Amino acid sequence: MPDDHHLITDGATIAYQLSGPPNTVPIGYGHGVLMSRQIVRGLGIFDVDAIAEGRHLITYDQRGHGASPGRPEPEDYRFEQAANDLLRVLDAAGLDEPIDFAGSSLGAAAALHAALNAPRRFRRLALVIPPVAWETGPQQTRQWYFDTADLIDSIGPTAWRQQWADAPPLPIFANYRQGKFEPGVDDDVVSAAMRGVGSSDLPDPDQLTQIRQPTLVLAWDTDPLHPISTAERLADLIPDSTLHVAHTIDEIREWTQITTRFFND
Image (cartoon, rainbow, N blue to C red; front, side):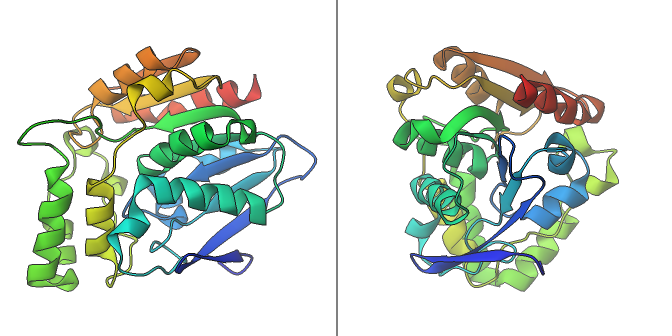
């Protein structure tokens, strides 16, 4: 994007953007794996710009995604690294005061790890479709990430993108045409990103009880990689938390207003 700033860090160049009046409590947003700022805005279901109306807003592309080139190293795409990137972006932007931060999937995982590592940096958290977590034993859901990485390495990213385009959407998006998107991750890092995310986990449950920020947890139905059970567990563990579960696209669209009210408290 033409008005992006760039942070060079640990094998990546992270593009971030600042908008809105600076003398306000800042709001930040981090997207999920395979996404980008542009894709999130194009989906039209979680309007970050509306949430931040009248506020200072920082958005960025995760390493290897969108306008942020990265390298093909799985460790670079683990949740812990995403948390480090988030904190470094806040440093680079000069945002020292506590921020209201919303993160989707990978962005939610980054927010949790970052809030535990640097609690003073966050005022409120909105965890949007937090990823599957704390799995043990065989037949884990997150094996999908490794299987997808193997498929990409086998058939190539171009053929994989075609398979992605031909695949049906999640049932909750069956009648929502904008729910389909072209993955916003670079071809040369996509399989590494899949392996990094697949080998990651949310913080230990015992750690999550230490989070003191008011936290909003938003989950949708019919998505095994972002199950309602993870969201429910987070809401049980985080002391000052509120859970909303959406079962229709119209209920998902309410998240913008719900998050706006939450961040304006």
